[in-house]
Length: 263
Ligand SMILES: NC(=O)c1ccc[n+]([C@@H]2O[C@H](COP(=O)([O-])OP(=O)(O)OC[C@H]3O[C@@H](n4cnc5c(N)ncnc54)[C@H](OP(=O)(O)O)[C@@H]3O)[C@@H](O)[C@H]2O)c1
Image (cartoon, rainbow, N blue to C red; front, side):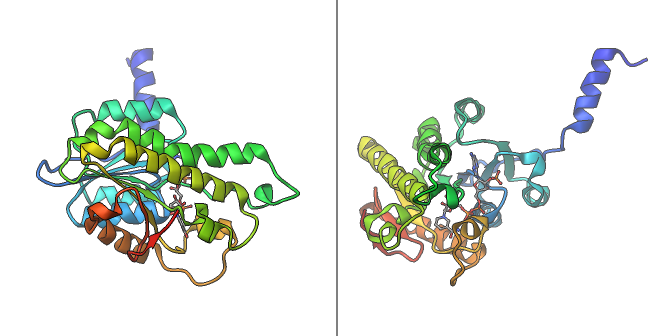
């Protein structure tokens, strides 16, 4: 007869999605990606894995990350991890789990646009502002600080944060509205910029990369209906950019095709 405790364990196991056990290659570089279940994050995971990297592919809900699960099924160098970038507990738990693991590229990709109406003059919802800020501005800083020892222990020592153009005077003020998204990206630039100043002497490189207008859910949330590039193309360029980073890029915002955007 199965004892009650044992049956509870069995029941839990049956209802827990089978996550693939990752086997990292000690000789390969490692990337940690946030928000890797869809859009650019998923594409980064796919392309880094295809190049032989160890990939720590984090997302809020691995059980629902079907595309990422399918990817990891065919690649043992992908570890899927739970990470909500707004959760101090989850961020520190993951950092503890990977203590001692060098991370060559920390890719702060998770981000949201937020609901347009709630950030339009006349219908502001400041709770929405806090939600956007927590993910876009604090998320990258929270994750970067938690994994700084991993980055320092690596060969490449790169912290990359996606986006920022909308947070600059030159782009963000070209058109009105979209307040909270723009404000959150300004704060994101400053957070990563100050972190770069603090870590100047450590050899860590911190760069913000604008991925272009990319056909993802986030772009659709923004209301943009003009030209865009695919996540596959954007991720390919961003990865190339990360490879080619030079000391002059440190603390800067650059585009996926290598131009510097002043902020
Ligand atoms: N697409 C563009 O045109 C464009 C332009 C400039 C910059 N960017 C930047 O590129 C990055 C990726 O965006 P995308 O275009 O790929 O958008 P996307 O397809 O909407 O993906 C956004 C990702 O962020 C995740 N995310 C949201 N809240 C999170 C949280 N609290 N913790 C962890 N993950 C969270 C989402 O996970 P869930 O599925 O769980 O929500 C999803 O994986 C963002 O930082 C964005 O600002 C994109």
